[in-house]
Image 1 (tube, rainbow, N blue to C red):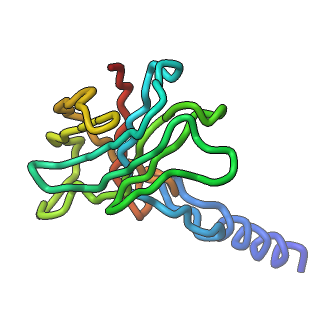
Image 2 (cartoon, helix red, strand yellow):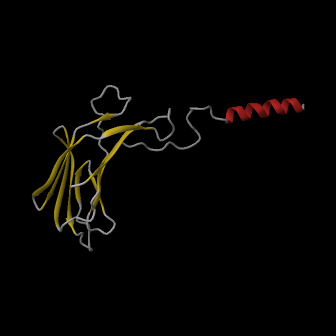
Image 3 (cartoon, one colour):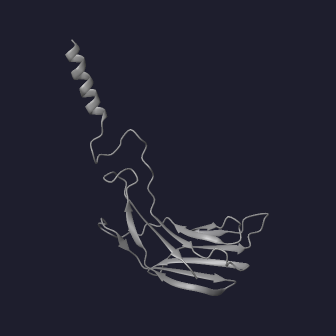
Length: 162
């Protein structure tokens, strides 16, 4: 009778132990988002005015944001359209980053390796161009639930100074 319990116990232990490289199924899956983030390196050089940010991929507008700096204390003056978000500096006097959740893999039949895209960032203050740059970020595959576990998403981050 003791050996029966030992065999049953061993079977339960083996069933409960995940195999190397396998997905953990007991935990909720981490959501996976396609992201591209541009972090602005010089966060203290934002002059007062209306700032406009436009992000395009191959001539197609991904999104745009407008912000009045310094940010009024009474309400937010940030307005975004399309798939672009703007993150202010902690003091509200500048822009820390812009980020999009746009799927840059659209139109691809198979994406298994890292890839790059040509993306244009335009920044204007009070209607005058401050900078317009072509960026070529490298998107890396991320599997937040484990290396062989779905879902897979693609993410890239660049540091930008102007």
